[in-house]
Image (cartoon, rainbow, N blue to C red; front, side):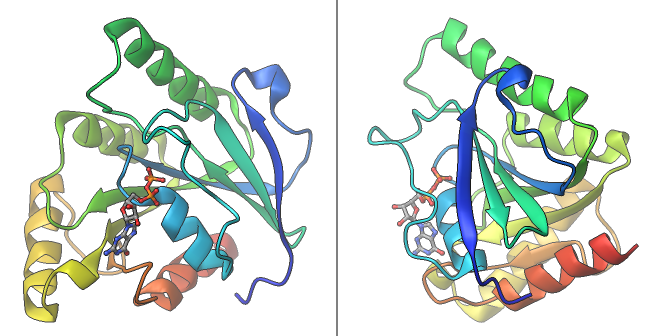
Length: 195
Ligand code: GDP
């Protein structure tokens, strides 16, 4: 899909603040710093549609982006930020969990993992939830420009194995800076929406 007019809609915490629409939603989940904002910008061909909070990892709101009036991108708060208190962590968890549980138009979840790191326990929990939800899903391995092509392909195999994903078309190596893998990820989104 070539995005023509992506638009930030609203930041929300509680369900009553979510936008009232019946567009299908694609949620982006991942640890803070995994590269969510950069990937949303790469997918929409914009430089600063999405941006991280001024203090890294401190955005705890859900950001909604209208993609050409056809679907909504939903940027979930990054989890696993080390420098916050236990209370804040559980609040973030609650914001994410609530969205995932109550949003009927949620259609697909894209989990972002930094290609260089093994999935954390939070990542594994998130992935388990994705599988159990029965929603469409994809895993984007971000920052692939930091590794050689060969090493990146090896990480795709390793991380797929760790998560128990066999079969193709689920795990996508991407780089927001080099814009590689972006078309493939769009193809996965498009094909999920056509099902
Ligand atoms: P978020 O916290 O998940 O929204 O992550 P950001 O998109 O803000 O990215 C976190 C950091 O990783 C920033 O310093 C980005 O510049 C960097 N980053 C994100 N994507 C890429 C990528 O594809 N390649 C490289 N080299 N750096 C990236």
